[in-house]
Length: 240
Image (cartoon, rainbow, N blue to C red):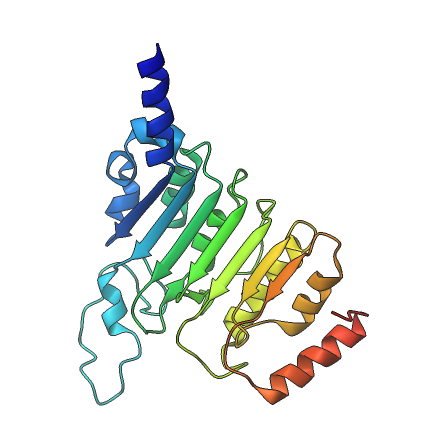
């Protein structure tokens, strides 16, 4: 009995965090490839790294080879390796999953479509979401709108871009972030958000909420952005 208890305790500890490389939609379409059934009850933290080949087609100049084929998307700015419906199924199959990290390595204008972000942020048992180097909904598809029935009651939201961009140069990101953060204000305790795409008015509104205890804005210092944020905070009566 002692050995069985010890084995269960070790398995729970060793398998609590899982990291996966996602090269194509097939990794999510097939449950046993994504996360075998025996492991699912133990996983509490999951990291997904995008290795989608379509990233190579993003940011091509007009004088470069534009005949590179797209395999999983019709727009290289939108990653097709994480179909929303299948991602929702896989995340809900891990009943104790509380932390999800999604990231990529390459410096390209390549991010997740709204359909994928919407389902990832709606998994009811999720409490922490970390997003690195992806663009946050870089473009909305034709007829698509920023809407969602309900989001998970996240207490921690991290969005980091480790390669700098000019502030306010990506309206779709800011609009999607403003929409999501506006719905999470009441539950968020920790917010880490790159300053360049930060929707300052929504951010100031979040700081007013009693649940907010820690906010970080990493990124390149920009005097105009700092002044604008100070004005937004003053408008909401935020002194911290």
